[in-house]
Image (cartoon, rainbow, N blue to C red; front, top):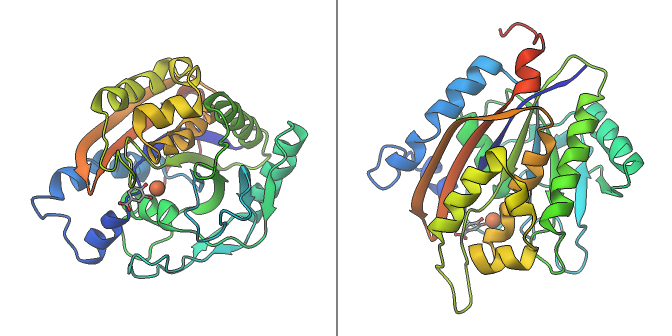
Amino acid sequence: MAQIVGGIGTTHVPSIGNAIAKGLQRDPYWKPFFDGFGAAQTWLGHVKPDIVVLIYNDHGLNFFLDKLPTFAVGAANEYKHADEGWGLPVSKPYPGDPKLSWHLIESLIAQEFDVTMCQEMLVDHAFTIPYALLWPEPDARPVRAVPVAINTVQHPLPSPTRCFKFGQAIGRAIESYPSDQKVLVLGTGGLSHQLDGERAGFINKDFDQMCLDKLVADPSTITRLSSLDIVEQAGSQGVELLNWIAMRGALTGHVSKLHSNYHIPISNTASALLVLENEAAARAPLRKAG
Ligand code: DHB
Ligand code: FE
């Protein structure tokens, strides 16, 4: 059976893609940010997941305000990146895992999450940048991906509780997949930021640090909030935290923190990384690495 080896939450700010394209990882502005990812890369090199279920929000590349599913799951052989207007180089396509995608879709719908199923899905910076941060070798595609998109853009948004339950359903779906695969769940976005309006540039360090803390052992502190509470506390784009909440929901075992990093600011966003091990997976016999 498939095993969930752990979960990672990470920021997906577009300017990170620009820094990678220009090779600025050791530049004084960027170094503390990129250094934060070394521990995550080392852990991934050890655990060697086969598949990443990548929970993110589309920023208008694939879905727009006219048609925006609350929950969508990719079911393609590969996912193409496209230019969203940031001027970032377009990455080579990412291999998918349609078998796991369809298992996820069938299981989620059986669990009453009526997801939109996407046999074609473009992926944006919220997918490509976290992938490049965790697997930095250019053009390497060491994991197959199943993208899962949550609407964090067009109100009404799903509630934090709903996103947590969605994540739990994803976790149950993965664990019922009858194939010996190691699966990483990744949630991208946040943490606090607001890109426009009167509070443009808003960052809330206390709230972010509370989230990094409570996501590990007590996510109910966060899921008790409404999505609008999160908009108020974290900014109108900080509500991308919903992707992290779903990631955390998917970790159905005992969860422990392996690593975290918090760095203010990247552009005008509070950037963060959280690496969680799913101890149910750690106890079960995993296929030998390598
Ligand atoms: C920016 C865009 C994002 O999607 C995000 O999550 C953070 C920052 C930006 O344009 O700077
Ligand atoms: Fe974003």
